[in-house]
Image 1: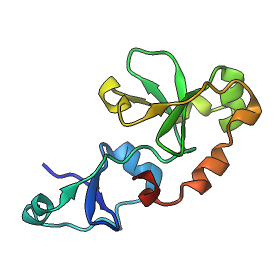
Image 2: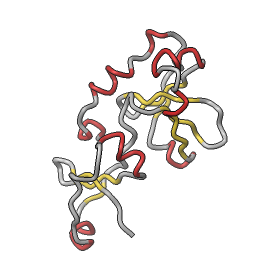
Image 3: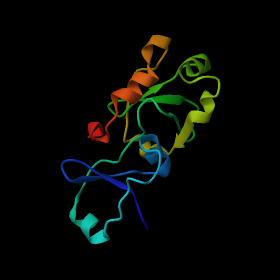
Image 4: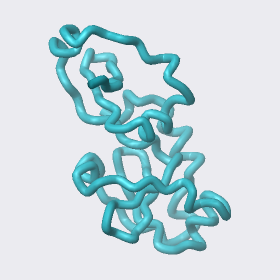
Length: 135
């Protein structure tokens, strides 16, 4: 079984729980390097990598609410379809990834987004350019 990790500046390994999460940070797998399992075993494990802020919308299995991802590992409920369209266009629903309730523990919940001024997906995405900011 193989996994993809991010090694931070403190030499901690942070796993990408899925390829979908990885692809919100990187366009392809070119930056990935194969490392022997013995090296991985010696390194300290850090927290899992979460979705890149501002890039995708999330839905938790069994819950109809749609959430925006913000910096600081924060999820905020997008309170209406009109707001989702405002932020991500008419095909906003194609940006939804479903996560398990278990993966939800990697995030904290913020206040719902109820106005167009409550969220700036471009600002969130560009403001979280580095995975090291997730620590």
